[in-house]
Amino acid sequence: MLIRERLAHKRPVFSFEFFPPKTDAGEANLFRSLERLAPLEPDFVSVTDGAGGSTRARTMELVGRIKREFGIEAMAHLTCVGSTREDLIRIIDGLGDAGVENILALRGDPPKGETAFVPVPNGLRSASELVALVKDRGNFSVGGACYPEVHPEAPDAPTDLAYLRQKVDAGVDFLITQLFFDNDRLTHFLREARAVGIQVPVIAGIMPVTNVSQVERFTTMCGATIPAALHDRLREGDGDPQDVFWTGVSYSAKQCEQLLARGIFGVHFYTLNKSPATRAIFEILKLTRSGTG
Image 1 (spheres, rainbow, N blue to C red):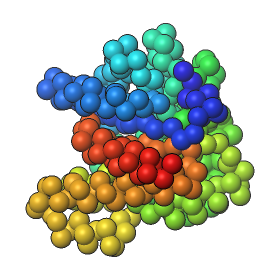
Image 2: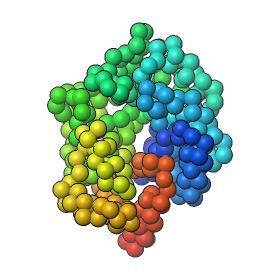
Image 3: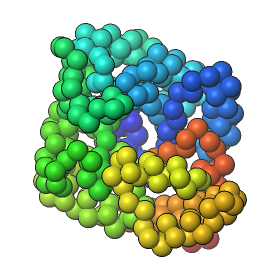
C-alpha cells in the first residue's frame, strides 16, 4: 500500500515510529511492543536508519518482517550519510525487491562530533537529491521531514521553507514533522508552507514524554521547545516515573485531540520502541471521540 494513496482516501491516518535495536533482547522487546500496538490498526509504521547508516541492514530486515508477520504497511527511513550514489541505488532497489513501497528520504545528521554535513565522494548532498533518486528507481511513495520550529541548521524560517519546497518539488508525497509540543507553532508553520506552494499532506509527529531528561536532550538536538507550563509540571514530577508518564500521556492526548479537531492529515507517534504511552493515548482519544460522536 502506497502511503500517498492511503492519505488520498483516509483522514486522519495514525502511524508509529520504531528504531532498530542493537541487541537480541532489544529486538524481542520491539516485537512485544509491535504485538501490543498492532490491535490499534495503524495505517503504517516506520523504522529509522541508525546514525551514519549504522543499522541500515537491520532496518531493511525489520521493515520486511513487520510486513510479513503483522500485515502492517512499513516504511523504511533512508539517509544519505556515509553512502555513495551507487550504494543508495543498491539499497533502494533491494527495498523494492523486498516489496517495500514507502521510503522516508532524509539527508541525515552529520557524524557524531562534526557540526557540518559533508557527503562522501560521489554521495548525495541533500534530502531533495535523495527524493529524486528514489523516485527515479521505482513507484515508491516518498515521505520527507519538516520542522515546525525551523531546522537547527537553517538560518531562518524562510530559508528552511525554501529547502523544504525543493524537497517537495523533487517528488515528496507527504511530510512528517519533527516532534513539537505547541500546536499553534504547527498551525503557523502550515500557513507559511502553504503560502510558498507546499501543498502535500503534513502528518504531525508526536512524542509522549515518559522521561524528562530524555525529552530535554531530544528537543535540544532538533530545535524544538517545551512549553513552560508543561516543562514545569514535568520537573515537579521528575523522580516519580508514573507521574511523569501520566503527565506526558495526558498532554499528548490533549494535543492530539486539538490537532484532530483542526483537521490534521494524521499523527505519527515517536514510540521509542515502547507501547504503553501510545496505547494509553489511543484509549483516551477513543473515549473522547465516542463521547462527542
